[in-house]
Each structure stands twice: as structure tokens, then as C-alpha cells.
Length: 128
Image 1 (cartoon, rainbow, N blue to C red):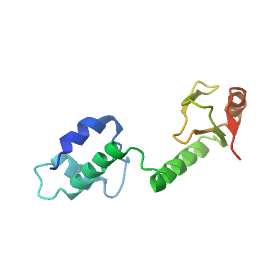
Image 2: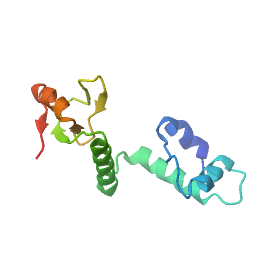
Image 3: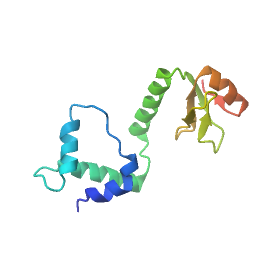
């Protein structure tokens, strides 16, 4: 049974779409028009993926790789060029400028050289 309402209520705060994409207008139209539209293949695949994600958790593999690559690109854009491993049970770091930087699922974080100095004193280790 298709249930767009089911996954929207569970994942509303975690469902992100790009600001612009060639396919975005059609995709949003179909999602918002469900269940009244003739074609709903994208709604089906979206609801199936989100149900799988909810049941299986982090898929790892290729998804995990692309997630790490996206974080690396964001980090370099913000001049965070030092890759470090966080101490156990640490999920974030407050930078010298007051910015909260989230530790990745893999236990690593990208920091500026200035923030890395303070992080080293707090038990973070450089990754070569």
C-alpha cells in the first residue's frame, strides 16, 4: 500500500531536496499532487526508499562514500583542511569562533588549522 503521508510524518524534518535541479519541479508537483495524479511512480519510489531507510538505517557503501565526499567539499570551501578523528563519544566540536561542527558518523571531522590546534588539546587526532 502506498502511503506518502506515512513517510512524511516520520521523516518531515529530514527530507531535503536541492534548491534547484532539472527534475525538481516535476518531482515536487508529483509529491504534492499525490494521490490525485495519474502518474505517481516517483512517489512510489520515494516512499519505498524512505521506508527502507527507516527499517535498515544508514546504508553505508556508496551512499556513505558520497556523504563523506560532500562533507569534504563543504569543509574545503570553508577552509577546513585538517581531517581529524574525534575522541570516543564526541559528536560535535565548538570552534574558536563559536561555530558548532558536527562529527561525522565515521567519527571524523574537518577543521581549520586554528580549530585543529585546540582540538588536538582536547583529544582529537590527525588523520594522515
